[in-house]
Picture (cartoon, rainbow, N blue to C red):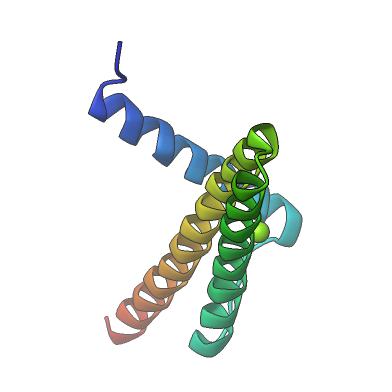
Length: 104
Ligand SMILES: [Mg+2]
């Protein structure tokens, strides 16, 4: 039976939340320039691309199990990209809150 779309979305968001918690434990609260956030996010995107290329090469070489591993790694890297984007958005929210408090 196919997975329900809502449950699929819920699982994805749970994975992103878990990755955000892992990042916070590892690095603490992150505050960066917009340029640095884009560098971080694109570094993670590079890792997604690397896994795609590795999966493609493994498929061409007929090593299906290796291709599947790289596809699983690609999904993990995509979750990391999403979590980094969320962390960037969290910084924007914190800065907006600080700005609002300063104006009031
Ligand atoms: Mg990564």
